[in-house]
Image 1 (cartoon, rainbow, N blue to C red):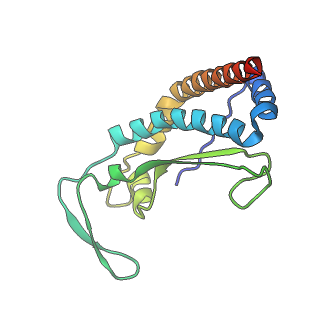
Image 2 (image 1 turned 90 degrees about the vertical axis):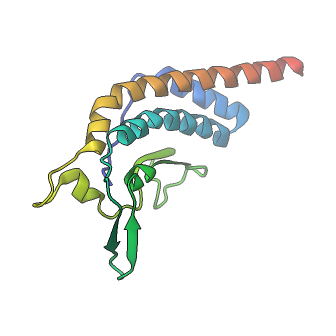
Length: 168
């Protein structure tokens, strides 16, 4: 899978707001707010990949590494384009989460062994770079969505906290 990350700079106020919220509602819920905002942005990548993914006209049967025969139907590749998000609830460095990583959102084609051949091509097949193309064309849109959704969720959490404090 193509491993690409996005660094969003200029979010110091939102980071401070998330830290303030985490003191009030807990770190788990605050990291969940961030993960869900990033996941919303990842939908743009998913849509771009699904729109441009190549689709075969014919169903065919291929042999797997273990020797089993599997039928590949038209649209199979598009059905495997998914978003997977996870949150580091403990804050500790693990095998999945590196140092300082709180949210991990992956967008891509999962469990398709021939995706590298489709994306980069072979000697017999020309490259059809729909994954790289989606990342190149949609990054600005994704950053805007993440910023907007994160700001919206922070404001909603701040309102809930203020309402809760006023009720007491």
